[in-house]
Image (tube, rainbow, N blue to C red; front, side, top):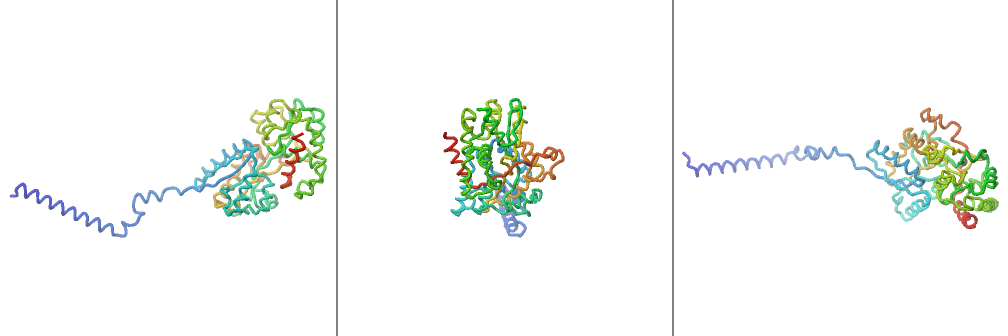
Length: 396
């Protein structure tokens, strides 16, 4: 028989033997090919199922609050459809000017710093043409943006496929039909009405919004050759004298004897309050105000003949962006009927894709409406025009 001491010793020896065998077995397994495969471990399997890291790109855009509202609505729709892409929205309020963003792109290129962390840029035709001259914009590949096929191809060709014309609008005359019984048909009609109704017309400071800029442009170029609105040669400035003389004459007849509200919204606000009865306004902003009740139901819109400024708003991809593939996905989504319907409903803009691609009820909304405007493209001459307006008109 074993005494207690011998029994304890035997138990310890057995435990040590089992421990050694277990250790040897573990070592043997650790050297086998199957156990060294990382994919065979539960942790590795879980990590292989993890979503790929999102690629984020920066989208710089400017405009009034409705433009910000538009992208705040479309962007989550896109990110839901494309969880692999994150859009960083960088909003520059209207009036602060898009020029610093353009200048940043140019400076980054010259300094060898790529696109300056700007991967997508929204602006008008003048930036498209300036960027073509400065070799800033990517030529957009139809293979990566299939929905470019839904855009008017002549419009794309006119800008050498350097931008996406994703929506359009026009500057029109907005007026209170309770006070204005006969709407003007021409700029001369507008000038006559201003003279007959002193203090009841306003346009915003042209450096703070496109509707005021369009009024000034249309006034200056009214008596010039029809193709002058595309002339970017400084020599054409000598023909501006008559237009500036007219703007100066009308100054004391403007709202509060020569007060020019800030931004496009500024003139809409004083039309809504009844302080004035007629203004130039972007069609999309005015229609949005009427639909939401921020403008009275008596507000009517009229496009003049010849038309005031208008046309597409463009999205441009900097050639030196490192996030192009992600941006292409976004642009393709923006050109879907789903996203274009949001543009129409939220901004009352004309669709960027051809109407035949939209539902019939939307096509019916735009019958005979989406034309009638002109697209002014005077390039850098606009800077000279604004300086002269400030010194000769605003300062009087």
